[in-house]
Image 1 (cartoon, helix red, strand yellow):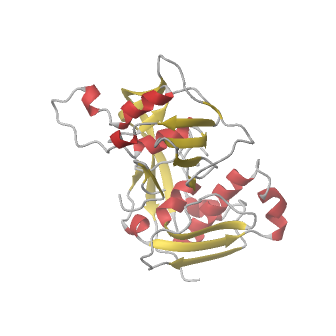
Image 2: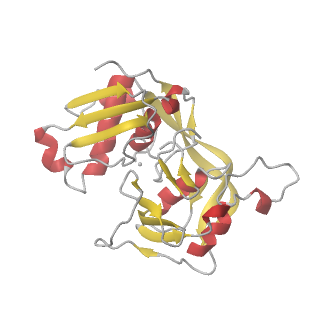
Image 3: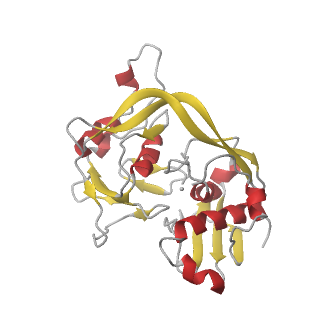
Length: 284
């Protein structure tokens, strides 16, 4: 993949969460949903690598450097069950994931208090990003469900080998994902996750699989866990018709055992995001 937002060990979020039903971004922008007061979007043609990999909001708004617009789309539109769509985006032009942009979106003084309340900010960020995408990219999207082969992320028979993240827990993270999940390198070479929902972990696992990975753990909190054996986390090759389900399972499944998790083959309804219309952003 060409758009690494998070790259540590072999876990790669190659592109960079909640409303049911069909969404049309243009219509949302015309509603009473809040929007940023000032937005600057400029294409970044530098070859100096990605800018800051933090997709969370700051006290005055939302700012990124040299990131693909797909990262913003995935932050603005999460699956209903949580996590990120990643490779479940359909009808997407290549430039959405290959061209890089700088975005500086500022909130108004009137919205500042609500914005800086942790209970409000996630929903406000999604609404404001949706309004921005509708206004500047003329984005229109909808969601649909279809039955596809999947892997279910479940608790292994041995039980979960991780704990809930404590509010005062120190964070030695490489990058921060939408919603505050943190990901970095452990001292022993493992991949360290903190403040992670199982839905977000399933989304990352999807990037290492040829099928969607769905969270079926039943866990609703935020967790700290270490996944070892990163050298085994290679993306799967195309499975032949003669392979068993175990052989089709991505190599990262073996690494999950260290956290008391496993992947099970299934065929289920999965949610997809469809891009109905999008244009390159208008000039500032």
